[in-house]
Amino acid sequence: MTAPLYTRDILRLAATIPFLERIDEPDGEAERRSPTCGSRMAVAVKLDEQGRIAALSQRVEACAFGQASAALMGAGAVGRSEADVRESMRGIERWLSGDDATAQSWPGLAVLDSARSRIGRHAAILLPFVTLLAAIDEVR
Image 1 (cartoon, one colour):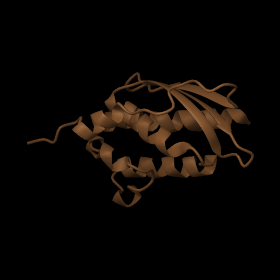
Image 2 (cartoon, helix red, strand yellow; image 1 turned 45 degrees about the horizontal axis):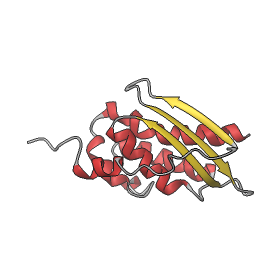
Image 3 (cartoon, one colour; image 1 turned 60 degrees about the horizontal axis):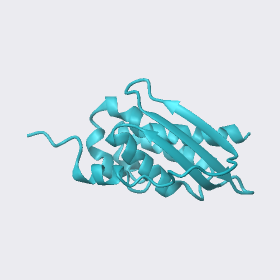
Image 4 (cartoon, one colour; image 1 turned 90 degrees about the horizontal axis):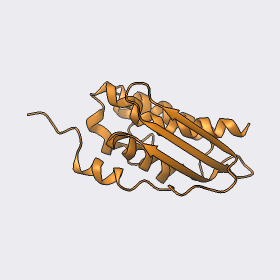
């Protein structure tokens, strides 16, 4: 018997996306769309003096995996630098490709384990991180 694609934990997580309220005067904003699944994501950020994320907002129009990933991204993004987010995203990409050693690339990632074998879902999982990095890049 095949394990279910959308587990109860994924659906619960998808319902807990933080930072949905728009922030005033963001330093950077980005919107991205996944060409494989059509999911859309918008992120706005404020950075502190050291270039770390001080505040963010997000708008998510995605499947349950994209929503769950956005919840994880939002829950762990504040206080991180661009370099930290970029390194974590590389770890997430490796984890999705089967590298179990990178499972700790971002807190809570293991909840999305059922998507690792479904390559078509990877873009939705990466979308929040891609969009966050694009918003940070816009600050420059």
